[in-house]
Image (cartoon, rainbow over all chains, first blue to last red; front, side, top):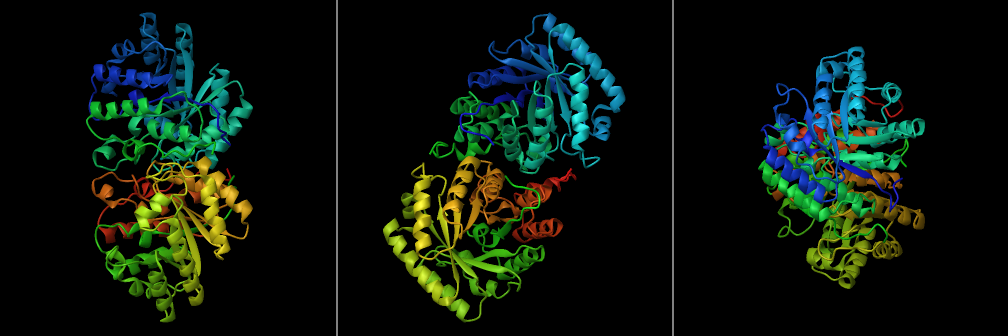
Length: 314
Length: 314
């Protein structure tokens, strides 16, 4: 169980996971303004951009430009889905871009991997091995994202043993940062505790990372369960952006977004679980995100205000 | 910690807490249709209506008519805020209405008690003592609702000792069902665990009930924490209705409503925590609520669908 004084790292995902399905391309200058506001609030890791084909995700053609704007004191994460993207990341780093680590997904559900990445597990695993090599040669730490870790919209049930088998496979590739992605908000707190507990006890030298979507209203509960179970890092997205922005456009707010970083940091602060993040500054960053994206986003704390004082120590 | 196979009772609050601030008066026939659908899903307790002045809450002038429509196998709860209302409940019961228990609030924060009920603690405590007497004479079990139990929008911090002092006071009045109301979504899971654990260990013969609003996105997490800590009963409201319907009208869905019963029952089922409720039938009741109230409500499960199968036993 979490205890007051416990620490957890937060990675801000709005710039990457949040924007990848956003219906409009956001100018690089706005992205840089936002990531600087996030960093100024004390967030120490930001998933900044993706090296993915512009034909698939037009949002990230400005990857190199945005990376040039990252403040010095932030751990920079990027994403790729194939070897070509890993080479772009390596080239960018060689050209001076600050890239500390690079994530790449594999879906625990092979049917989801096929739908999302158009590769079966065998083909994709070979690609991932090559990605790890390319990144290693460039001095970029690899980060494996196990998608559909708690269930899959196509195949339904995902066995914990299948997820742990991917952890073992990644471990043997030398990967020491592994994210369990709740791609469609299929996790419940019990499943989260069981998965993180099993993984952490089997691989004590791996950084396990929690990433949850809020499709079923359990995003905060699941993130707290991951921290309970010992997750080193959890992810949030300012204003909860991510998931299906079309749903946001239609007013079904909160339906499938990420966990809102503001809401997560607020409840953690309330329980004296330490993130190093300054909540008022984070709320200003969230307000900036609303201004830059041109609409109210999904954070409850932005609407309801911070918790009335109820110190965890009382 | 919750364990698979654990049981918890759910009280459905949409008919009372959900509708009390609803901007339109809902016809008694619609209310009866809805409560029958809720009961048909296996919900065993329903907060059906309020005996409050029509001038304050015009929604409940049909209290006696709605009570006449409650199915036989449901525990019927009503609410009152003063002695006059308790007498109306007693008269209704004497005239044949099925009323099993009656709730009445006291805010842990005296400033909130003054704002909400226009009585200081001393005056209100005297009224509650008389309410308990009236109900006792009518064979209606008393249920004390401690509002602002985790924090107050007026005074801010609410001390746990102040809440437990009200429990002790209620216990001495003979009350054995006590609800902790998170009136404005001020609770965090740690505070919930601490309060329920302290209360349950000090008063093992009291039924403690959890009731949470979702203003800050922690409704599900807090409800699960209450169950973790041993709450006998937790409350939900179909579609999450309740709180500030004006916010709902403006499209800020999910902002200040109750915990959506559909979402709560879904995640409990996913973790094999047993409620006796049939989820598909409950989802039909929630869809009926949307039809009767004329708009999409706040349940995520109604939009995202049930969890993909990930049995807690896997």
